[in-house]
Image (cartoon, rainbow, N blue to C red; front, side, top):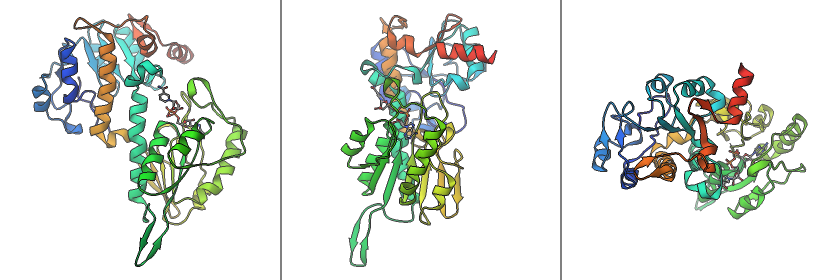
Length: 370
Ligand code: NAD
């Protein structure tokens, strides 16, 4: 397992607690020095769990696990046939994918693990979205200069904060649950009709807009056309204006994040209100949001998320490590990791193998790029 080197990455792909599971399957675990430091796991903890700490961890490995994709120079040093397991957003990493294919590395992308029930324990998109949603609600509560809960005090009654969550997938639902636990009154909207019931089951109110739902394949949303997007923004503007906090998590797989909240709508919010845009890195749901930055729009604070799960590296790493471990154990036979490409989980997650780009969409994108 490598020490992550990309900026703003504090997570680690394997935590000491899960090392015995891999050892129990007959694997050896070798960890780069200080790999877990930013997630608060010292080298000694890995050693106590049965791993070895070595600066040569990567060059000697048959399997390399990481959170972020490996640097290209590391890939070039791998032996042909080595397996890598990491997040690998292929559309943004076409050069790296080409390098992996040329190095004859077998690469599996955690975001491509099919979301079927057998693969739930390997679903890193969900585990990290859960962290992001929780975190977004806490950031909002911390930045808001007002209480979240209803308080009845001798000095008078404080009304609860009104929180609006836009996008109620895994991250949005966790933001709703967290804001509710803190005592806020929560409203939420999603383009998928199925989200309404989930929103209500968490004690939040579903915002009904007079618009058709946009259910796409695999339980995901479909992209809106520009006319529907404009109408949605207009219809949501009053709900935004009436909220103390807006948390946005809307995404469409493979597309930039949809713009849901305009600057005009922000300017109508009460002074001191807070907006947290979890989707800031993928284009942003809120006009003007910038990843990793806090921007003032009049007297409204707009917080742009940047690698939000990494802000809680302890549990984000623990959950991610469980996903990676489950995937490794699926492929382990008699102490050897042997990917079975007839298994839809392995085949679905595979980006490169044996010098080829196996992932169809990535191959198409490569063709388009030239
Ligand atoms: P995601 O990160 O792709 O998107 C987040 C949310 O944004 C989604 O709920 C989407 O409908 C919503 N959205 C998109 N465009 C929007 C718009 N214009 N306005 C408002 N909301 C918009 O989604 P996700 O969190 O990864 O999960 C999406 C779905 O997949 C959910 O139904 C979830 O329950 C399901 N899921 C299934 C499994 C499984 O079966 N194993 C695992 C995880 C998630």
